[in-house]
Amino acid sequence: GPSADDEAFRKGRRELFNSAGFMEVMKEVVWKMDRFGPKELPSLLFVLRSMGWHDRQLFKLAETQVVQHLPSMSLREVPDLVTSYVEVQCGSRNLFDEFARLCTQSVSQFDDGALAQLVATFSRGPHKPKAFLLDVGADVVQALPSFGVQQLASVAVAYARWPRDVPAELAAGVAQLMCESEGVLARRMAPAQLICVLRALTLWKTRSRGQQTFDAGDMRRVFEFAEGALLDNAGRLTPDESATALWAVAKVAVVDIATFRALHANVAR
Image (cartoon, rainbow, N blue to C red; front, top):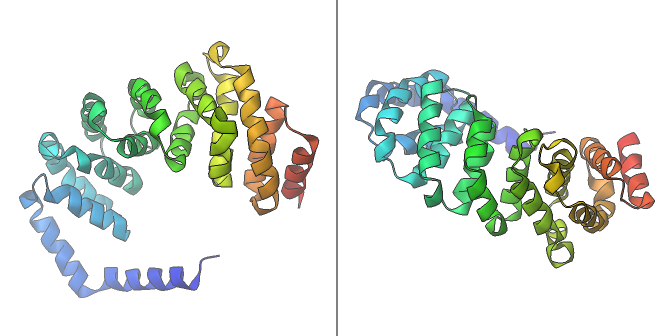
């Protein structure tokens, strides 16, 4: 369950949001929304989202200004801005079309962290998420070797939402990365991250339209390298994580029986 610190944070946040002073500030923000320019507006929405102030009315009200200022905004602000609208679960088709157009046209100017964030965020977005992922697929393939483990896992999760359509080069690229240096990435990943990647690879291998270009030898090696990490962490996995890992290894059918038993015992406990 939630820790005492979490409870204290939530209590403090509730008190802040319910205070007369905070409500006065928010009324002022709404009243003067049209005065926020291309620098201030993304910062305002980022701060509100980070605080947990998920006021859809305010984000809807800001939308006209966002679309108006988008061409003038620093590209560094854009990933957090898109994330704000996705997390607050708000934003029109027109807004997301504008986001997608800008991000697709400017994709080569985003650093690896921003690209991974955009892929993960758009995959959870309300309008044409798959189209964006496919549009930037070639850029993601190029960036794969530069991603950190969390970025790689989040990108794998995003493209695993549409396994039939994953670019074959992306699926093969992830598998090859997981095989480099005797599977060093499997050992560096947190167990949950590793399981996300194994799940994605399994979905791509079994459902992708481009599965014939996916190297079966790489797939087998990925799971062999992952085996030690799965076995070491079997007792610390949640039942859901164990079930996902068990499903993946059963689909691929290359894992040692001891790993299979350890995962199964954790699901059944």
